[in-house]
Length: 119
Length: 114
Image (cartoon, rainbow over all chains, first blue to last red; front, side, top):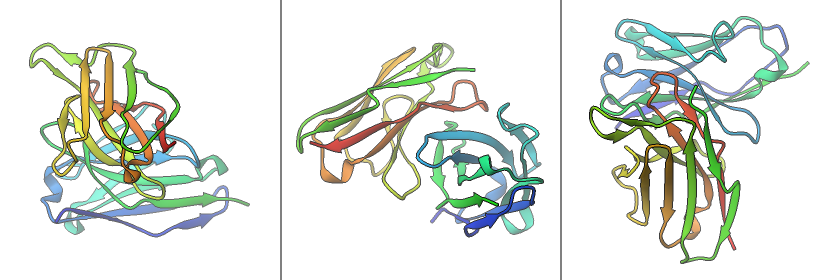
């Protein structure tokens, strides 16, 4: 069974750094792109970027380029999303998603990691 | 960027009745070389992550009830729930994957029971 299990909720202060994780299981982690999607409170879905764990090829949405870093450790089947300096506007639910190979849709979703940034 | 719009923002439908959601893309998502529309639909129930319902505009994901259907081509698409059930209360999003990897979602349509 394919699963994406994300790390737990975080409460941080503005200016702090953060790295959240997404562990894949039940499939070949290095053969599928993994992406991240943001959902701000009460709002819609925004695609942030994707990484191919096989070779760490990474692409970002222009809206998030330079704001976050996506990485992966294929030895432990885990993808990461990190911030170097959080802002209050980063408060949101973050989902990791697996991209199906044949059609670039998001066929499996993690349970979500709620990040709250508040002073 | 391809901009996705949806209508209506929300709708309330009686149990057993039809629900229709529209999605429009700012440019065609029909890829001429394979005649496929790069358009997907997702369902997000309260407190849950989204779930893939339909891709290639009209192909149901495995396990999705056949009361859900997708149609349309080019820039105009429709998601139809033929007979609304209580468990279908959710927000529905369309998404284009034509400009991979620059994916964009529509703003969502909330479906409630009347």
